[in-house]
Length: 389
Ligand SMILES: [Fe+2]
Image (cartoon, rainbow, N blue to C red; front, side, top):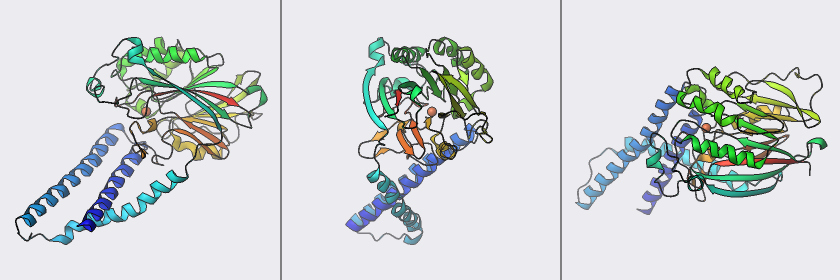
């Protein structure tokens, strides 16, 4: 009996791992949103449906045994899928557990001071817009309006002395859909301005509904940054019928579009390279060979929507890469952490700081999400201060 329970648990973990693995990789692909949506639903249906079928069968067998009836069911076909899941579990569990056990925060993170702000309470407004938000907002522990302002000090020894102490507000994944009202985004802008960043960057998933395009100029033109404002787009902008309009509105709001581009920009008394990657959804990664800059700038910054571009960033010697897309998992289970993380690397880069020579990667948890739920994973407004030592 105990052995049966143990084998059932292993099979369940394998089944669950397989569904999560497929779901995460599916959402890292550049396919049309409609295909992603329906295949995603099929994976969820398969995951829940098979659990239901096997659960029902276990209940029927239990009743038969209880009634003293020997079940007349062919066992072998029923065991094939759980056996396959058992094999998946024996591979998936160590692959999940071992990196967790050896994971550590990079030495590059010198400080991380966080303050939480309940924006709905501070503004005295529910901030609930259209759709399912009013339902989701009632879920106990939902942190969609609990903004975490995080001051992170990052050590980059190769930083030119003139850039020591540079501050960057890294905004990501605002997901303007109308499900949350415009006041939420105005409050984000106010909070960002209070941080007085030198640079403001946005790493994609800005707006995905036409009705929210009217918000772009009034909201983002109020953002202040002494040394400039830069943006790229993300996968959710694929929902817009004319993505060029959003780009033009962002430029009208004072932002520079670095999607699929690399440019040298003046900063303090020097120049740096800022490049943008919207791969695999829009364009291609910018060509850096031959280097577009006659004299290679001493500091290279990459804005990428997906952390999946880290191998490319490393191969091209970027010093700092800023990304979003994975939302920190949005729902982080105690002791387990993020499970849903739309990346070819699964939840490896779900959120936080990662150093892989020579690139330091910062993945923001983002400010919102397509689905208005966040558990143990508040929206994040990071102010990054870069220091040499
Ligand atoms: Fe996103």
